[in-house]
Length: 363
Ligand SMILES: O=P(O)(O)OC[C@H]1O[C@H](O[C@H]2O[C@H](CO)[C@@H](O)[C@H](O)[C@H]2O)[C@H](O)[C@@H](O)[C@@H]1O
Image 1 (cartoon, rainbow, N blue to C red):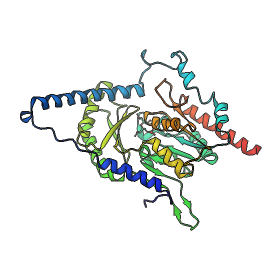
Image 2: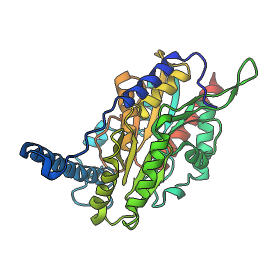
Image 3: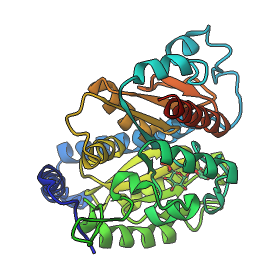
Image 4: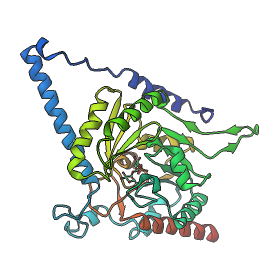
C-alpha cells in the first residue's frame, strides 16, 4: 500500500538520499582485547570511554533541563528572568492581532505537536488523552486551515488519541507521513504515504526487544515502540537511577551505529541516522500540499519539545510563518512566540477559528 502523491519527484529524490546516507554509515571496528593493544590504542580507548561517560551525563542533564521536575531555585521562571523571555518570545495570545496582521493575504497552514501541546504531560504515555474540548477545537481548525499533527509517537497511536480523519499525520518524528484519503479524477484512492526509514523496521524491532530486556532491572523504566523509532521513558524512574538507565541504553546502542539518540521530556529517543526530522516533515508536507515555492503561505508550528526545534528552525530560516513554543519555563528556542500549556494552545486555536469564521462571513 506504499504510494506517493503523484508527480513528486523531489520527494522521491529526498527519500533516496536519506536512505543512502544511512547505508554508508560505517560500523566502528570491534575493540581489540586488552593484552593485544598498544599503549597508544589503550589510551585512545580509555579516552573514548571517558567521552562516552561524559555523553551519558550530558543526556541526563539535557533531559533534566528540557523538563524540570520541581521548581528549583536554579530553574529560571518566566516571571524572574528580568522580562527577557517575554520580550523575545511573547505570548501568542497577547500578540494575536500582530500574528493575524502578518498572515494577511497568506494561506495559514497549521502544524501541531501532540504530547505537551494538545495533551498535558502525564506519567503513563499510554494515557496521554486529549480532552473532548481540544478535539472539537482541532476539528474546527482543520475546517479553516490545512492541519497536520507532527509527533514522535507511532502514527497509529497518535491517530487513536486524536481520532480526526481529516488531518495529516506525521508520526515517528516525521518518518511516517499520511494524509487524508481523497478520490482522484479517475476515482481511485490517492493516498499520501511517505516512510523514508522503512528499511530500519527490523533493526528497530530488534533493538526494542533488547532495550526491554536490558532495562527491566530499572524500576519505572518503560520502552515504547514508535515503529520507526523508540522511546525510553525516565519519568517514573528515581532520578538517582537516571545515569544507570542511560548507561543501559548506551550499552545496547553501541552495537547499532546506524541509530542515534535524541532527548525529549524525560525520555531518550532512538532513531535511524537518516537526515530526517520534524523540520523536514514540515517541508515535505508543505510541498505535498502544493506550497513548495509559494511566498503566500504562512505555516504555524506549535510544539513543546526539543525535537520541535528542527521545525521552528526551518520556519526561521525560510522566513515564513513562525514557531510557538509551549513552555512554562524560559528555554533556548528558535520559536518566535510562546504559550504556557495545552489550555493556552486551545485558546489560541479557538481564536484562529473565530477570526477565520468572521473573515469568511465578512467577505
Ligand atoms: O513529538 P511528541 O508528540 O511530543 O512526542 C514526544 C514523546 O511524547 C511522549 O512522551 C512524552 O509524553 C508522555 C505522556 O504525557 C510522558 O509520560 C513522557 O514523559 C513525555 O516524554 C511519547 O510517549 C514518546 O514516545 C514521544 O517520543
